[in-house]
Length: 434
Image (cartoon, rainbow, N blue to C red; front, side, top):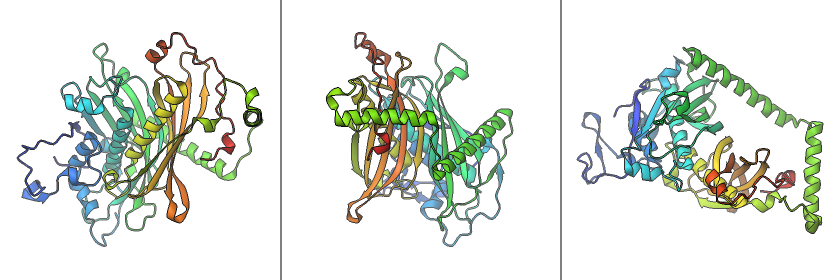
């Protein structure tokens, strides 16, 4: 399966159970590749067995990624930037759920839908492939770029994703800056009832990747992007506007801009209610709860099997673990099975390395109940790299998820009104210690 930087074809996803009768596999744990050359099987490459999608993608682009495993010594950087179109990086993958029952079982959740945590892994892996396709120059003598996930701008679930129907993910680069790439992915799933393409979009995600020089570690320029169609031009303009907005927000944070009057009043009211909880708990509002009382936490040592081609922990793995903790937090808080709506924002602030002691902490950040049929629960998840021997703990990632509750779960409560309380969960947010 040959990887081509401009190949637009769909990559099939299959189950990850190995076939012991595969004639291409032998006792020396090697595979016969192109021109009779021998290489290790994909399952033994770093980061290769997180999901069927990562295996399919890496098998497709294995020839290109051999450069990362054994980069040319003292190779020069790319001398001239190319101008590419979104079509050249466009990549799609197909899950054959309807025919592959093993694949179906690998992705099934308790409600016969696709596991969102695994899907987040796959989205990150596909976005990484697209960033490579946009940045590659087809010159094996140049130094490859180090491409990492910088942030997730937004992931919105538009409808439930069934695990019994074939699923397709399509994505491409839609905007580039000097060293950053905005990649948009669409998860498509058609139903028998409709053939409308717009109705088949189940999820939309935007990933931001940044390029670093693999030798110096400094920001590296990426190939230019030239949109061709009207839709591509529209996506380019929207992505550029989002980039400018992110820069403005970052500048405001750095300048520590004063709160507006309305925000100050709201904050003071919440802090006042928090003080009542601490000083006079018997008199506190029974429909409110302190933010600190919604905390959950997981800890783990990052293993070699969770790393990517660059030796760092795979970003999709971190998103998967954060989602599972956020789901559990929403479940414990609401008392009903949550239903995922969107990822509001994800920041990859610092890399996570093999062997790191990672602590992932979550809390309910705020809630909304204007629509009693669809109360909203916003969860913050913060990942810390903790080094006890250095007495240090640094934030590596922040994640923000929004959930509601499943309709079928709510129906089982015999009319209990989940939206009847005030649910003031911003209490003492400014004083919370993670």
